[in-house]
Amino acid sequence: MQTLEYMRDALSRGDREAAIEVMREPQRYRALFKDPQGSERYLALAQQVADDAQQHPCMDRTSQLNAYAALTGGLDLARSIHYLSLSARLIEQDPAASDQDKLEPWLHPHALMHGYFEAGGGLALDGEVPGLDRAGIEAWRRGQRPLAYQPELLLAFPLHMDDPQRERLFRVTGFTLLPAPRWHDHTALRALIHSDAYLDWLDAAPLHLASRLSMALEEMATPPWPEHLRAAGYQVRGE
Figure 1 (cartoon, helix red, strand yellow):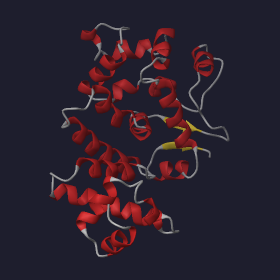
Figure 2 (figure 1 turned 90 degrees about the horizontal axis):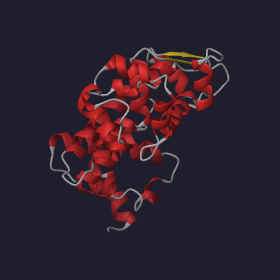
Figure 3 (figure 1 turned 180 degrees about the horizontal axis):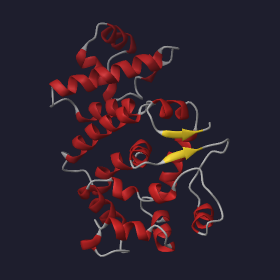
């Protein structure tokens, strides 16, 4: 490990190897980014490493993944999806990666909500932060309670995945609500959303999908997200 002063100087000169080293172990070098402009400089460094990786595909894998993770965290869903896709491609190339590892980019909150919005979903916030809870969904199914989101679209998130990822999701979770030959039957999957068995599946280990969906909703309802979502053309009402 180089000294912090050495690394600070190297980064100021745009040293490529220093940037890769810092992105390989960002926690070790976090003291370099504690000043008021630190977050901005860290994102610029992540962008440098991500851009460089396109020219040098053999770059350190961990540095690339950390750079993509940093760039995924902004307030632009389309940009997030771009870097999640790059992460997914890199993970797919790792022979040691498990099926769950390969799923994680597509279960990121931004990926889940991008699929929801692209499917025509919206948010009606009106002062209440939405979350996914079973009681609310059951009341919605009985027609007793409108929700801040559209459950028929959010809960259908497997339909927003491509076929290989949907198959991987169902394999990892031990999905048995439909036989494997019908995993891509959109009509059958949409019908399942209204069943208690589907809600049980969402709650179950190992992925705890209901919690992931709830956290994704809550993030999108937290300022300044609503403003950015509206600017991107998504249907979001209220704050």
